[in-house]
Image (cartoon, rainbow, N blue to C red):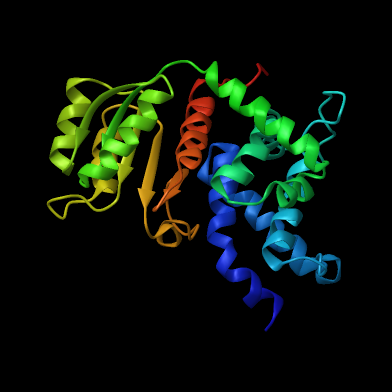
Length: 267
């Protein structure tokens, strides 16, 4: 099996991680393209002594770190002064190592040992980084959340997680029309949306209708994430896979709100 064939099944999930890390589909997909280009340009440098998925994410992390901060908090030199490079460097600065550790373990399902390898820290340090990220989440500003989910048990589970995080729930919708109506009635600061709804309507269409009225961060929930992570069209920035873990939902909510509240430094 060729290296490309080994890596192909993991690309959708690398896109998910990259988008969550940058808070943007376009910037996240840019990093994934840069990762693949680096592998194609120098296949002999691809880590062959680890699982292909680990090697893929490790290559991504090396590229990501090239526009991140050094250990003293200073911005690393960005090759080229074009606006895109500057924007990427600023995005890198906005997602600290602690959140990378949390996303890799909670959202991507890596073991602490593998996550430590990916971001090049000791396993003991990885545990501290995750603890730091969780502590930061506890201090996060409270948000008002609209849940769009037609399965009652799943909806109740999500509502419990949201409330336990200290956020308020504006309502639970089971159809496209109900979702839009609830959003217009009580404007949420975050939307958690399933893809397939009770009346065979689409959660994606519901979100499009809502976004046509006002901007709000959205997290999609689906059993088939690879269908929404191709990089070929406008797609979700934040996505949770069913069945989900509580920690995954917590990490996704925190990261979506992190970028919604964050601002870039002045020019």
